[in-house]
Each structure stands twice: as structure tokens, then as C-alpha cells.
Image 1 (cartoon, rainbow, N blue to C red):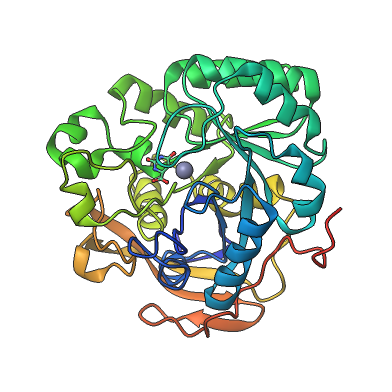
Image 2: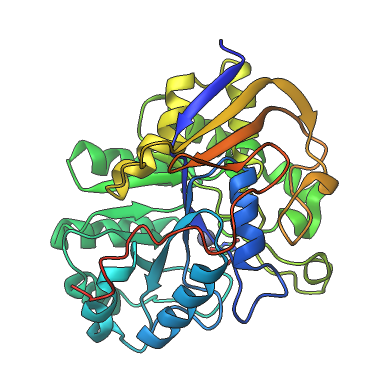
Amino acid sequence: MERQLTIPGMIDPHVHLRGLDWSHKATFATETGAALAGGYWAVLDMPNTPPTTTTPAALDSKLDAIGSQAVCDWGVYYGASQNDNAVTYAQVIGRVCGLKIYNNATTGTLLIDDQVQRAHHYRRWPKDRVIAVHAEGETVRDILALVVQYRVPTHFCHISTAEEIGFLREAKAQGLPVSVGVTPHHLFLTEDDARALGALGRMKPELKRRADQAALWRAIEDGVVDVVESDHAPHTLAEKASDDPPYGVPGLETTLPLLCTAVRAGRLTVDRLIELVALGPQRLFDLIPPDGTYTVVDVETSFAIERSRLRTQCGWSPFEGMRVSGRVCEVWIRGRQVFDGEHVLAAPGSGINLFDQGGQGA
Ligand code: DOR
Ligand code: ZN
């Protein structure tokens, strides 16, 4: 294996950057800096942070804030809301990467647990644009029924059990337009770690059994998994120390090192790694990296994951203490170096919305 690996246009299609009303947890400036330090060209931000991205006005304020702060490229999801915001889809479609539907409870207030309401959103969203879903367990089947009916390309986020993998393997065999994401925490941690980590190991979906973890790795090997997504979800240490700690863990800076470590251990091929963090997400969202957009990672030098080296504003990681290899040396976007292994070199606001079709809507 070459010591230095060059990866074209890494994308994390599932992050919660925070900012706006949750800027005490993290900001678009800090977390897009963390994305560069993690090797990413672009990140796609979820709509559950208050004010939820479920109205054109809330979308405008998020686009303004992220647009002025981002140091990497980006996209944002619009959120399906309980009080039926489908009427606004035409207004926002030209500025967002997709629609997110929360079908099980998690951080924030977005939740649609009624199948009739879910069907309504599926019917109204454009058939050629992605819907990303938070669906756990049997809910995966409920969503698959909508994919059969409406044929909207659907990305299943953070799949975490052997059973869910089984449902999706079958759906793919039937030729349904579905894609599958798994997170590094479900690949590298289990419920055994959850006990030791306490609140720092608390997230949705929760950490699972070893047998589930093994099923995820098999699904990576046989191609059922399309992308690894960090589900980067920073919360402060004080919040995590409270009586009712919120769900979520940061992951932008640790995903690539963990996967490089798996390559060195023979659990993953280099080609598969590049598929999972770059080519897979590019395909899902029809993105082609601009010329001069790539990441150079040193896959040999090993180091321990430590708080003091992280850029995320929350300042901790569920992987602290793990020895990994895979240090990000350089990130380039459109022919300009934006990260040199230590410093962010890009100016705030230099990142662009990859899904901006002129602000006109569709
Ligand atoms: O653990 C999680 N945290 N899962 C989610 O679905 C949302 C996220 C957050 O926003 O904190
Ligand atoms: Zn998430």
C-alpha cells in the first residue's frame, strides 16, 4: 500500500453542524473547519437544529449563516414537518440537497410517525430528488412500502442492525431506488462500549450488539452499504453530563482515520474506502468534484484520538484513546489548498452551496 492516498472529493452526506439557535454547541464556522480537518470537500447538513429547516424563512436564515461561515462546500436538507409543509417544496427545491423525514424520535422536534402523513410527503416531493430517512427497525419496512409506491430515491441513514440490513438487501435485489448509510460509531463501537462511555456513547440509533456490527461489515464487503456517514452531532460536555443527556456524537474528524485503520487491518480495501467516503455519496447526489478537489491522507502514521487535537467545538469524541492511522495531510478544493494538516487555509464563506440552482426554486 502506498503511504499517501489521494481521495477525490470526499463528501459526508449526514452531519448536524448546529449554528443558529444551537451555536453554543457548535457553529458552521467551527464544524466546517472540522470537516476539512477530517478530509472532507463537502458536508450535507440536517434540518433538526432549531429553528428547524422546515419553512422557506428558516431555510433562508440557515443559507445566510452557513454561506457566510463555511470553509468547505456544503448542502442542506429541508425537513418534512408534522404540520404539512409540502406546499413549500416548490419554493425550496432549487436550493437544497434533499428532504429529510424523521420517522423515529431523536434529538429535536421533527417526527412523523403517521404513515398517511409520510405518504403525503412522498407524494409531494419531486420524484427525481433524494429523500433521506431516519428509520429504525420495522419503520424501515414502512418506508420501503412508500418507495415501492412512489419510487422516490430514498437514502436510509445510519442503518445499524442485521435485521435492517436484511430488509435493505432484499429491497436492492428487487431493484428499488434505495441507498444505505452506516456510521463509524456503529462500525467501531458496540453496546459493550456504551456501558463504559455513558452519555458520550448515547446516540440514535443506539449502539448495538456485536452480531449487528458484524452484519454491517459484511454489508460493506458485499456492496449493500453505499456510504459511510458520520452523523456528526456535537453536544457540549455539560449537556452530556446532565440528568437527561442528549443523543448524538461528533464524528467528522475521526471517520477517515478509523476507516484507514480498517484498511491497514485488512478489513476494508482501499477501493471500497474511496467508494464509501467519496464516490458513493457523489453518485447519490449527482455531484462531480470540481477539478483540483481532493484529499491526501497518510495511511501509515498512527496516533491516538485525543480531545486536544480536535477542532469540533464540542471538544470530545466517543473514540478518545483509540489508536488509529490515517492522518489528513492536505485538502484541496477547486485547485486551492484549504487544509495543510494543521491549519484551515480557507476564508469563512469561501465554501459554496453545491445545490444552488440560482435561488429560483424549481
Ligand atoms: O444521535 C443523534 N443525534 N441522532 C440523530 O438522529 C440526531 C442527532 C442530533 O441532532 O443530535
Ligand atoms: Zn443524524
